[in-house]
Length: 296
Length: 340
Image (cartoon, rainbow over all chains, first blue to last red; front, side, top):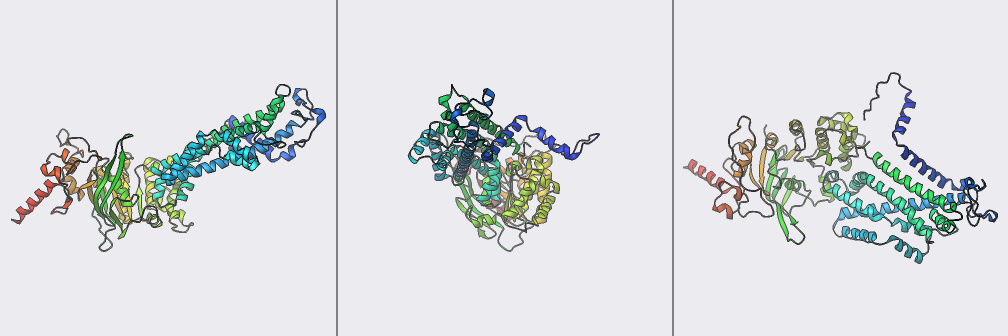
């Protein structure tokens, strides 16, 4: 990539020339996905200000009102549910709760997995055997059943739900982190830095982690949608977020009874789930390329 | 080119005494584990400012010897002394501290550099690790080091993949020199470089040694490279040193039949068409070491004694060390004639 400016007959003002050039190099799909994620984050942050009604407020006269674009009224732009609660308000609150759960759980599983993977790679021997046995156990266990039993016995506080979902997918990070750390240690940069006299913390924190971050980020973007879907599934089964709280999966779950008569209750949260998971995947793929200096 | 022996009195900078390194190797699922003697009873010493070249075919234990010398691996037998003190255990605080005094130059410079950090940051890293200099003085030291190996100051901003192979190797060298080490182990430092760059890299190494006075263990399979940079060379075969001496003497008049075959393999201009002795037999299998002298199945002058008794590495009259029954006998014969 040449860094010197090309000779142009009449150079445009520099301040205008730079930012559009960088922006135009980003693919449209990525811009859209970034925009979507930004919107979701804004919605989650400003949920209290954006809600037209309280999400538990009943409007018994306007039950099962269709959305504004389906011959409804603008009083309830996305319609109302069987108790006359505003779907838009509920959607906004659901987005906030689902994002908190999904981000929290993804971060937790990435941290646990990477840490265990590094431990296995560093100590080898029995530590590695234990970590790998746990990872195999985790992979072989149907997660939904584990989640169901834990939630059934311990009730479902939000914190417990996040913790539980944070256990989902850690074995993938552990395997990736272990494999890449071992190969970096056997030959190459990690061995070179170790022979410079660096401490283990420095080798893993400064060199190995940044080098494998791109792989970990991609696998985070794979786990993130799964966590959203898992949360949706649990809520759908009635074991996730409990009424009167609401989440995207919870809305889909309770909306299914009215699928034929009032599909809008279910469709808007379902659309948000699909769009968000898609946007996260697109951004993750793009980020991996951006974070790699050899591809810049 | 003259060796500048020891600034200190008595003790060598590096003394390696009879070290060995075995690996257990398992072939197939149910096979018994086989012990491979990668290095078997190697002794050598190195003075400050001296270069010892280590040559041999691949798999003969050169690189393992280099790792043992640096203390990156603990030997199964024997001892390594650096500057009079025994090598501390791998990974402990004393071992880490000692890294500032002994450094390694790798065969693959792209693999040895972190591709996510600019060259300048990586060259400064040994200074940070060993807490040398003030943080404010480090950038100047990095520029100085880059200059010493022939890189421009602005190349400190570059990432490894933006440099050529020769420039990367210079960057690795600059990083190795950052702490002013007393010992540099170069493991095949030039074999990944273009032929045109190899000579430059070797000249740079010799120039830096003349200026900084560090000892170098130069490991290579390239005989001509070793001869150019070394004050002494050691020829290895199957984990043992078979001949050690001045490079011109060893390569012009090799005493060990293996060294003779190696020296004969050096291409000479103008000798096209002449027959040269070619080694017979298969390359050795380190897991199934021949009895007696390990070289006897391929040796043109092997005798009965070679199959049963391992020849020791003994000095000859001219100071060269050889491990060969035939060479010892003829040397003794020459000596007797002289005495008579």
